[in-house]
Image (cartoon, rainbow, N blue to C red; front, top):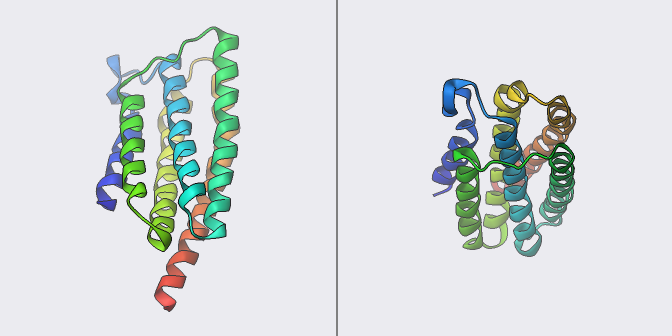
Length: 180
């Protein structure tokens, strides 16, 4: 089940590859806006669930960081699209992200305690790696509006920091499990 969820999320994010869009030109700025907002909302929703169900204080701290940081990114993206008078355009990638996020929430809701913590953190590692890959290979290179491109470049280090934090926590949780 865990592998299927990770593959669903990976497929959703890699669907943002240039060939996935019409004319093989990559996503348009309105499509990129929808992908960014959806990707952040998926992580906000998972973080809120982890705040409620997480067992470890460190997992809850990670979850709070995800909710806070991704809410700020979504607010920045929303402010920018309003400023530019651009309407985010739902697309196959944003729809796939939403479905993958919903599937992940369903899976996580069925877990408790340490199993929940490990699954949530594993998801964060995979998700953030895939988001960074999508930023680097698809979203940043295809953004036409300089302000949108600048926003994507500006938030990238936060995604890297999230990935590193989640990897650290994952190794700590696995270390605890292997030491028992």
